[in-house]
Image (cartoon, rainbow, N blue to C red; front, side):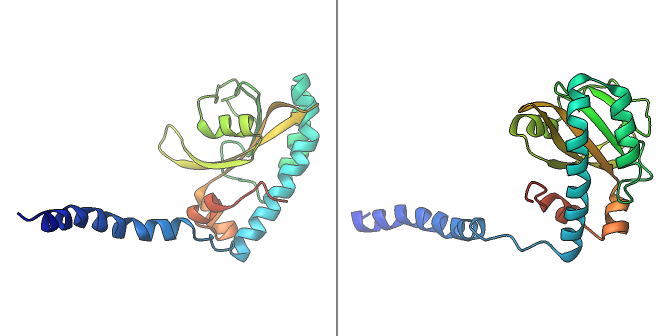
Length: 187
């Protein structure tokens, strides 16, 4: 076989591979579409609740003052219409090692360790609000939104809000994809 044909045959797989990768490279650079009005309304409502909880829960969590945490959760999270009404609990507080200190309303899972959940680690280590689906032992799905609690520039734990897929769809008309695409870290 002449060298020029051999060279052309060797070039064809590289050219084919390059053509396959172009759509991915172009798609990877695309700017995501802006959130829908429903998604933005959800983001603003949840961000307001989280800001209130983060400000009021940081000091009691640092001191492990469960009575104070319970009172704050009851008055703030308990009166927020957006937080899950059908969940085992609507909100909870984890310490910096991932142990659930308390929930509102009270649930029998206090004391469980959630440190192995990736989204908890991301919340603590990167000081970022995260949202993820979580599958429960009965195979039902819930969505957890975790926000870091910072006291004296140290992360002392996280506040967790719980939502069901039905709440997300019924109350806010959001799909899971829209929920997961939201950036709750922007003001």
